[in-house]
Amino acid sequence: MKTVNVVAAIIKDGDKIFATQRGYGDQKDGWEFPGGKIEEGETPKDALAREIMEELEAGITVGDHLVTVEHDYPAFHLHMQCFWATLNEGAHLKLLEHEASKWLSFDELDSVDWLPADIKVVNALRESLGG
Image 1 (cartoon, rainbow, N blue to C red):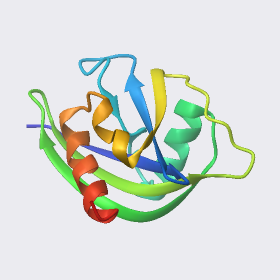
Image 2: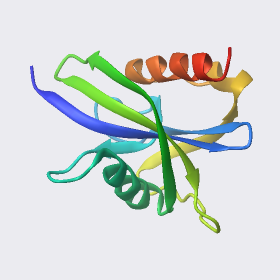
Image 3: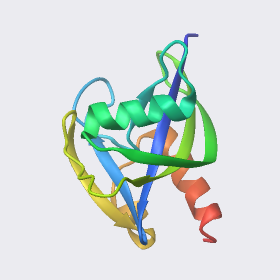
Image 4: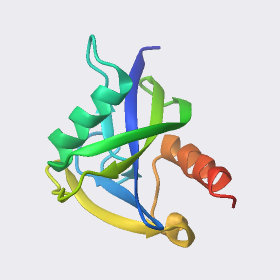
């Protein structure tokens, strides 16, 4: 099975976490943490900063690693490295590829239909945040 190496940003602002709804592909309409594929020669953190700029037209500061998720989808194996991130001063998130987004409080994390791999990230968030 083909492995796809991706990165995802857990963008935090105060007590809120940013979530996006996919606007394309097999996983269309599912909720996820934004990010994308690591390109040849990129570090995961560099890839994440580039992907957020491409998808959301926003500069971020990539922080510590939260969790690495391994998940088998029907067509591929996902290897997803997830990092905490914050928006750079003056940055505003603009949806260029997603159909919707939400800032979710810790108590609202279950209010969206997360993609299977991202459920594992939500569980890691709960552990990290003491829930």
